[in-house]
Length: 344
Image (cartoon, rainbow, N blue to C red; front, side, top):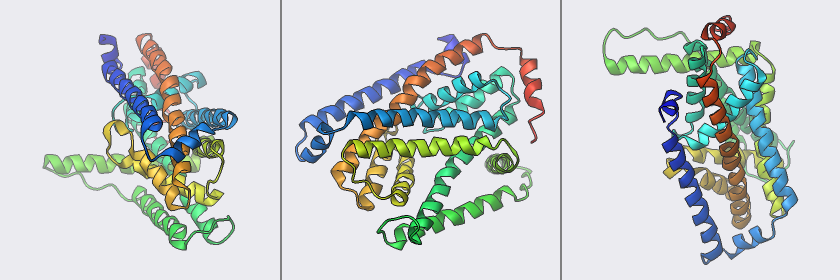
């Protein structure tokens, strides 16, 4: 267990979280089988088409590989592809298995790279940039889908408040983020622990935004390709689940809006992170006109793969990372390889 602590992983916490998900899964199965008043949901599950379910799993794996591609590009492809693959899968597994509100993956990845000899500021800033760029794809999708649906280039009978409203709000947020990233750093306060902490957080976020803009404008163009793949294949995985239960999902533009806005449910603090995302997605699709039984069946099926596959592949990758940390390459060699990329 000492080695686990050295690598920054509390395997007891991982085990407890895995057990929690197993208990939730059992309770969900029992509830679907026994609870009254959800006969329509049970009917949807009983009529699922296996081919579409397999397709949902394949797209989910493709989404995970898209994240790996984005991670590799965020570090200018300096690390070997195999190491990027292992680290990318480990980070996605950590997001599920480590109880850190979704921050487990980036924090763990930055920690691992620092342990291997990558400059700490580079590891932290590039991971912050990776998070911001992959998140920006979701926001950009809201702008594009909302605008194209509102002007009629994408089909969808939805009021403007539900299409142009989110697009305009996210567009304004984008503009503020870019301005924030290009602003001058605030002056370091002379005293006060809280003020100094706020100053450090402000600077870290600002530097992350600046790094994101530099990587998008001047870095590896496949960073954008990987980030879009990560997003689009996950959307496709959920779409496959709707087809598995007979279709009836909204048109493309509305579907993307419901998907992206529904994931805001992940911000709701729930035990183990379970319930917020599911509730957000189901609520969003119902708000955009999907029948509740279909939305519930599709979202629950999708979440099995969205959580289960990263946990499965990520657990194996976490073990592999443990081995690498126990037998690391020379720190000087790693540091020299990354040093030229510190201030890009």
